[in-house]
Image 1 (cartoon, rainbow, N blue to C red):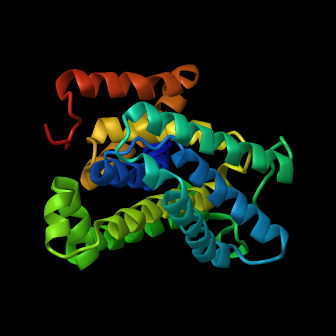
Image 2: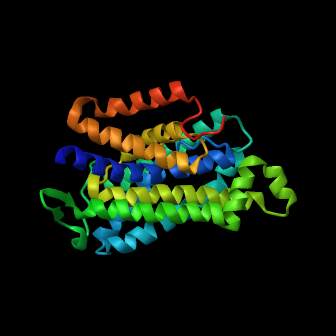
Length: 285
């Protein structure tokens, strides 16, 4: 039972990372109706920013704050210069441009840091394990669960209890109405895009000490993010949270029960949800 309890707790931690990764994608699609295949590239940039910061001798805690802000700023520039020009185009244009952007980022990562992966050390204060009787669990993973839970609550407050959040939610329903109220809807779009990219980068920073960094981790992350968004429902904050937890727990449990099929079961879970609820668990029809 301790093994399964450990895997469930692991699944919650992984699921919260998947939530951070997917919620930005969900916000961007819900507000802009924009299919962003460059989302995994922002996760990749966040992880490598953390790696480089620690190579320079900076602390993990500084990287945790600075890296998502840096990546959000880069995403804001990319949205202003490139992506805002194709919002009104068909989704095929969105896919073509964002896939191209993701490939450019990936190749730049390979040029600067090389094609091989590397490890990122766990902060000294979080190294080691916590013991409760016979139950042993890594300190960093406990921190991951607590930190992402607090961040999720803050993000929910930002989207539900602030003027920016109201504008984002209203813009997802009717951008014309928001414009008539005197709100610069294009500025809201840019901020929402940067926020989504920043949360993906934060997921990359938090994931780096667990899985290390490599130039192809963005592709894997993008696939997971889309699965979580599809399960939870497009444009739903709560759906991204529930979807992330479902996928994290399923993957973690299956790694014990059937290790070879752990990744397969992610897509089986997605198919099962879509058969019962085509718009996702909490999506709007």
